[in-house]
Amino acid sequence: MKGILTVFVFYLMCTFAFGQTKTMEELKAEQAEKAAELAELEVSLGELQGKVDGLKADVAKLTDAITPYPRWSTGLLGNIGLNLSGFNDWFLNANPSTRATTIGFTSAAFANLQQEKYFWRNGGNLALSWLKFDDNPDVDTGDEEFQIAADALNITSLFGYKLNPKLAASGLGEYRTAILDGALNNPGYLDLGVGATWTPIENLVVVFHPLNYNFVFADEGFDYQSSLGLKAVIDYTTNITEGIAWRSNLSTFVSYEDASELSNWTWVNNFSTAYKGIGIGLDLGLRQNKQEANAQKMMNPNADISDNPLQTYYVLGLSYNLSSN
Image (cartoon, rainbow, N blue to C red; front, side):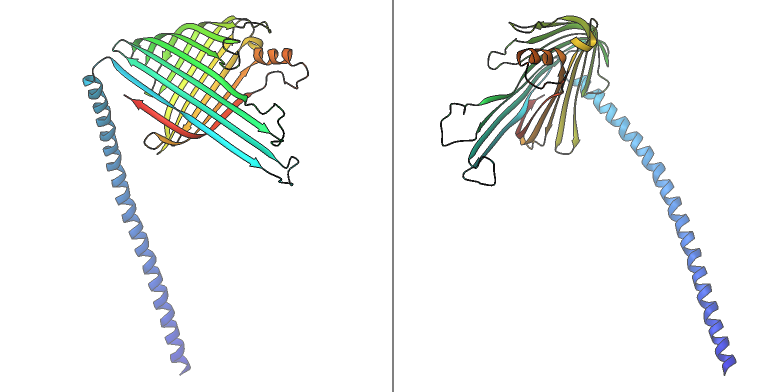
């Protein structure tokens, strides 16, 4: 009886081992079959993608051929931000009763012309914001007026004669200033220069002008210096993901006379989730200008101002986007 039991157990073990081996062989065969099928599909997909890209290029060329000149595109976008806060006898605060109001506004407009042999791109950016803070609303101290928190105006005009579809000889005029509280053209910056403009893709414009004069205007106070230098501008617009648009403009001037003292740059970014023209938006501006920092040191000798601090502003709020093509 014991011998029969041993033979039976041995039979079961052999059967199980054979079944396992057979299962592994079947899995390997199935894997090889699927891998071969995948390789065939990848080849077909590559061929289809090539055809799709070719058709897209053909459609773009045909669209360009049948679109009449002149071709104008215009648009207006920006943000409106409003923040209100108030505390009354809130004793966890150092000032139990406070009122704070922040109002911000940004706007960017453009009007671009395309002709067969040349283009003309025009744009403007305006950023304004005001802040009012009252730490004793029950007493009229006379200090409850709105204070300027951000103030920047930028206007550009770029003309280019096309040497080929992606490269043009160009001339640029760019003007920057503040506009509130007597700051218009005090200081003001006007760049006039010539060079080349490269448009490798539809929504990217790269301006490189090695011959540019940076005029600086000021009514009084600090002695701003104008100089000859290099002007470079990068303007890019894209959709980061579906429903999130990004526009970025970097403008920089490098002085040939004194790069460390007379150069400056400004970088403005706009993010928008606009749906049918309305959504949530964020505007972020960055800037460095040593002449402006030196002017602030002269006018406010007791203020703690670093050598050339990074100037920033942001506005978060309701965005709007209106355009026509």
